[in-house]
Image: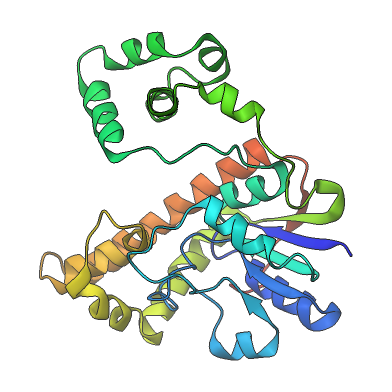
Length: 286
């Protein structure tokens, strides 16, 4: 049984490809998008519609309630329960897909107090250099020491656990789906073509009820929550609160989506070079 893994930037048509394959060949479509796990967002995150879900079996879409912590480790545990079937794993969260095919180091979560201390240390003058100096030699040699986020993460792991990040990574277990056990497809798209699709899709989302979803979550809105990171949600919240007009909110959301697609492409180029490229074209849809 060989699984199919489909990665690609947002709005590139990968979900439609997954559905077409499932209808033609069978298989369980499994979500690999960190934004589509939340039960409160169907339209805003372009989750498969109810009709699409009825056309082929789907899993791990909208199964997490807002306020529930959910990590890549949680996602791996969820998908491990599905491996007795042929899976069609589709999504744009590169961390999920690389963890699935390369394994994930079992690093414990960082306590909030240490995270806050790390924030404060990094913000202080010379904080980055001092954090780099505090790292264990193996980790310091492996990470990008000019990247503040990477340095802080390594410092937090060492401070919280007493073990360097490189040491934890050496204990990475085998992947749930080894590269040889799956066909790995990376959907690519022309940047301008994708930008047009992103704008078109956002306006379609608005017609389909994205604003209603955001309005329903407004009483619980907390930008620090994971579920609140859905692209477009902060901008529509700002509109609903009277802080900006609707055209401005829409433009901000579209720009944020384009920036997200750029970040996805950077991850794919850096971490997924050996995936088979599949060029998206005008006949594909989100």
